[in-house]
Every structure is written in C-alpha cells, then in structure tokens.
Length: 254
Image 1: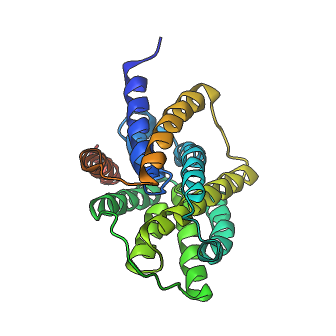
Image 2: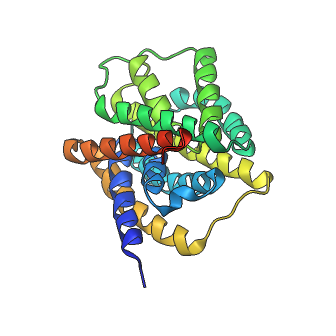
C-alpha cells in the first residue's frame, strides 16, 4: 500500500519540478528541501544527493530541450561555464561531506534558493558576455559547491547570469538547464567512482514519474511565458522550513 507520506512527497516533487523547470532549473534544492521535511531526512547525505541529481537529470534535460527547441540556447555563452564546472562537480561528488558541515551547507543552499525564487525572473534587454576566464572561475566554483552539496548549480548560476547582465532571461534559462544537467551527471559519476551510489528503483521510478510530469508542464510554459507567484510562495516557505529544520538539527534542538 502506498503511504500518505509518499503521496504528499510525489505531489511536492511535481510542484517543485513544475516551477523550477520553468526558469531552466533542475530543482535539486527543492527536492532536497521536500525530502528534508520527511522521514527521508534521516538518510545519509549521499543518499539525498544522488536522488536530487537523478531527478535533476530528468527535469533539466526536459527544460534544456524546450528552451533549445525555442531557439534560446547560446552555445558560446554556455561553453566556458560548463568546461570548468563539470570536472569540479565530479570532484565534489567524489568528496564525502557529512554531519553538521553538510547540514550547514545545505541550509545555506536552501536560503539562497528561497532568495532566488523571491527575486523574480527579470531579464536584460542587451546582454554583455563575460570573458572566458571569468566564466570559467564562476563555473568551476559553482561546480565544486554543487558536487559537495548535491545540487546542479542552477540556483547559483542563474542569479550570476542575470546580475552580471551576461544573458537575457531565456538565454540564461537555457544555459542554466544544460549546466545543471551536466553537473548532475558529473556529480553522480563522482559518487559512482567513490563506490557510494545506492539508488532504489522502488523510489526512483515514482519520483521520476512525478518530476517528468511537472518538468514537462513547467518547461513548456516557461519557454514562452511564466508567472507562478502562488506556487513560488509555497516553495519559498518549504525551503525556509527545511533550512530551519537542518539548522535546528545542527544545534541539536530537533
């Protein structure tokens, strides 16, 4: 029998995938936040990370395909970021970070994700491309952080692209989706090389179905237009609650 908790988790994963994919994100921070508010929160960090990466592969792949099909992907923008981020994400995935350090990093990621959702999706009319060196430094740093925490890096890259005025909104979404997909794959590869992969099909399949549905809807809508303030507010609340729960765990108050 399917538990009530699993049904609620699947609905939450669907909502996360729908919103995040609309702006080119894979949703790892949202998936980790949802799982951190359930009995899955007691699982080891590598368990949480590998499911977040796996779901990222699905959703970011769908998002990139949608944005690329709509003509928003700029290869010369993506390449410098990706070339540095992928090996660093693999290194981060190989590294083992547990306990209070991981909880602190994850809480910070949740807070940054909440800020990202609240900041909106305003773009720029004219983009100024970053130098290859600057893009490589940013991409490499984000890749390493993503591998350690269990993210695809979109919550860091997308604000950087927008605040730096390096891309228009939908160009940024397309680049971010590809960045997330490759970093997630690299993170899984790093964990695999370290011999720490442990994916359960009985969970991965229903999780995957939920995010395929959400990612398909969100990316299709986001590649043309997007305004989802209600869902965004709910997800911000979830992220803040998850960050609080992790922080209380660090302080041994929960």
